Length: 368
Image (cartoon, rainbow, N blue to C red; front, side, top):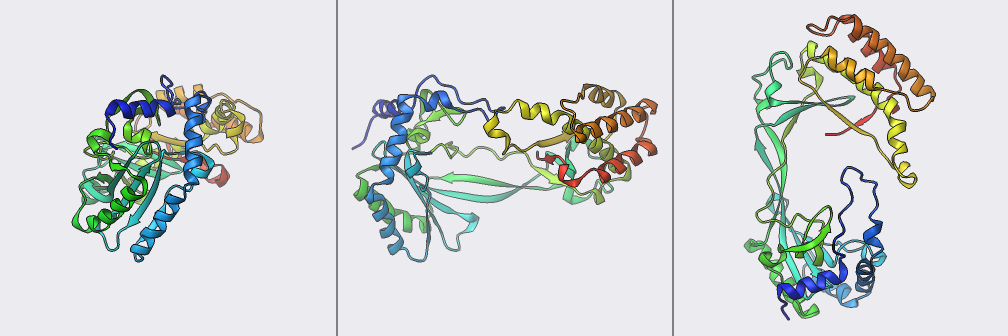
């Protein structure tokens, strides 16, 4: 039995509290206890646990596997018995020999009599890079505008003009080979659960005053899963970067990165105790430090002095005391430098010795 938009919203509001913002995206350890303590969330958790016990769901998967024995069917709802995640049953079929790494996804809501089927496609797209990254202790990035003979040995290398990014698309209009499987499975879903397909124009309807996953919720989010970007057409591909190793860089640029690597390493060691103290105790053991730095390819004396002046120790561990000693040595080298041209040989030699002698297991982990 089909429902109107208003009827579907009424269902959503039984399981999702209104007026509660999502966690701060800059504080990933922040809990969502306000939402978790609501009556609506308790109903949703109970519905998940109850749905996991429904033998119709397990029997239907067995029938699909028997009908298509040569296709891998994956149960994506193993989490339901614990009451976590989603408002639907989910399973996938990986199509044999399909291009674009196609996978058929099926979601069957247990909150409303609807299901959704689509093809999830993964493919590579070539485009001009937006920037470049050099993994060198931490990940150093620089923009396309900075690319030139001061930074790379061969600025005309064609590889610098081509980046490959992976793009994902949700496609509701299935191809003929996908329809072969989807038609039979859709009939199984409809006869088993008495539900109808939810079209995208309904599923992408925004739900007023409900936030899920730090974004405004749609009916697809609330009645199926938040683990998809339910947008038509699919969102644009993200930034494209080309990764470079130091063998493709000029000696001058490698010298700059060596000094910057030492500078940021000292800063991470001195700041880490403060960062950890700001994280609630239950999350500290699993916390990982991620650091990246951008550069225009040159050292700037005033910026280095400002960064060094900002660094303050937050404990008196042997590692911190050693970092403070290194900080004073680098401050002296920067003060003696006139700030012109490439970094002086003495500064580069000191930085190289520092990053070589520091224990490898204490190197900050980097990501862009």
